[in-house]
Length: 114
Image (tube, rainbow, N blue to C red; front, side, top):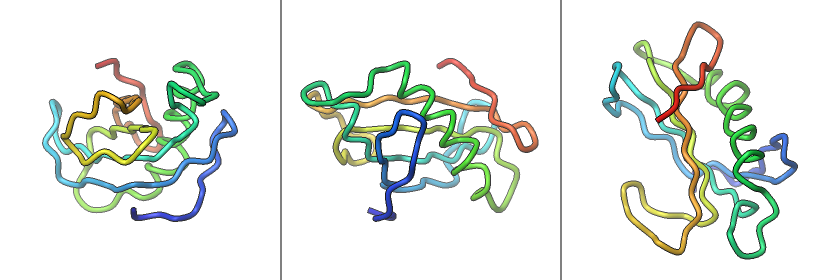
């Protein structure tokens, strides 16, 4: 994992950065994916539901992802939360995962439904 430090989010759960995937093609141009470990969203024993997770992902886009963008213009940020580390692109039916896409508009993340 890239980040061992906990990142505070509105739900109160502590998330950790798993990885950042740069140069991923997206529907409107360059997409950067920020993947986070979020044990609080687990189906068994978790305390964070989908609505709270959605607020956490919006927060992570604005506060964590946007300030870390570098290089060519990024058109989209995808934030994902998983209750366990799952390799990118792999399926794990036991894992709980949430994904949100955001269009980058200057210094703002604009939610885009999948």
